[in-house]
Length: 259
Image (cartoon, rainbow, N blue to C red; front, side):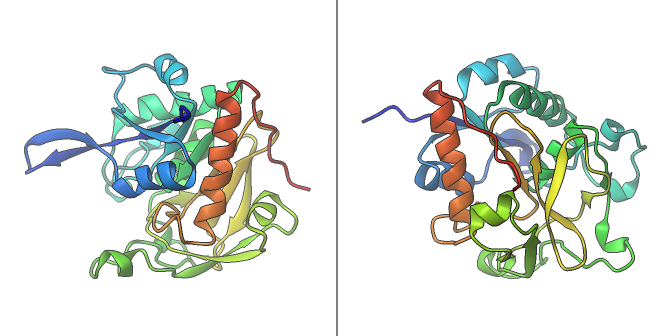
């Protein structure tokens, strides 16, 4: 069997049974990486006490910045924390934000999902709103509180991409249907961040880093759900896997740019 490139999957900190600390990641993330991207998933204990950014860069070929309940701490974008900002994971912040910047500097592939979408923006100097449903004219993008997993991850709104842009070319369509399971959203894009897709209410949903040396895309929805069968998720993970294989082979990956 040919050795597969390694994609580091950013984990989240949980308390199991209310008192047992653990780092964990959704199985659907690993399944998307293994089955669709064609790479080996490796769960990263996201805490600078256990790993360093340099070690991760040397160990992994690409990185998947996953979603998670804790939010990026607002101090990372120059604001004070409020009750509306929710829970935090400062250890994850301490790893992912410099990791994003290092990947961009090296051209190492990185794909952001939900919180990962927000991390990529904050890492480059952007800001977030703690609760976008409170903004005038915005919808509630949060996960439905009840129902089955299928109901919670059901397709709920359209995302419209920039005509001729990176995501339009990648998906082969200007509009796609996606799920939505987030409370926060991008307010001010960071340096080099290009918002390439929006929900009908104007919420940013897809971004890439302009003039990035390698694959650097992120989405606000959760493409890891049903990634092998979903026509929107599959090309995203397939292209991520191709970029990671190219990096692992030492060839790098040309940046995806808008037309």
